[in-house]
Image 1 (cartoon, helix red, strand yellow):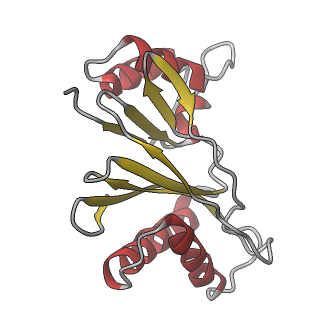
Image 2: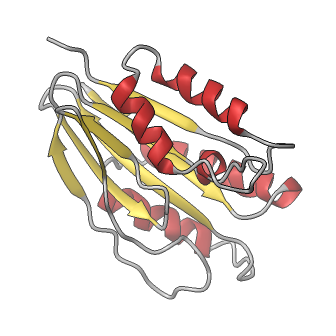
Image 3: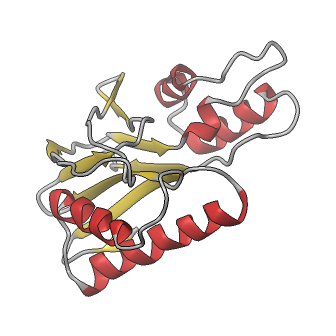
Length: 197
């Protein structure tokens, strides 16, 4: 989370390729680059931020095996909006509103040396009382049980629908009970809740 002006918060969720040292270095690059762009360059709009991140990454001149996804959003608490854009993040955030769960669908290329260019279209929706936004990486939905069946995003949607009190705690508990063997990928969850009026 980053403060990006009065009443505005910038937030992102990212998933880097691989594991180990190279993934850790790439994660640090994403963190430091986002901090620099948002806090020092004072850019905030998703369709400005994502191309800037991509340009910084291209300057590293890494090989094609290095890439990452990034979903970035700006919450405007004064105007009660959320504006977002996607760079290849396949786990679309979930939006709970009016008793239903839907996805914040948004397309955009991975940040990768493979692609020569990419455009990132931003979308804006109104935030109303009681809305919940869940951001996550594929570590949780790809967690498998004994029969090798993935946990799936539909279970996350069910928890958002049926557990309004501390839904993240329920998600962690349920995936821990579901998992068979060791956790194969890291899990990141971020929940934004609009207070009921």
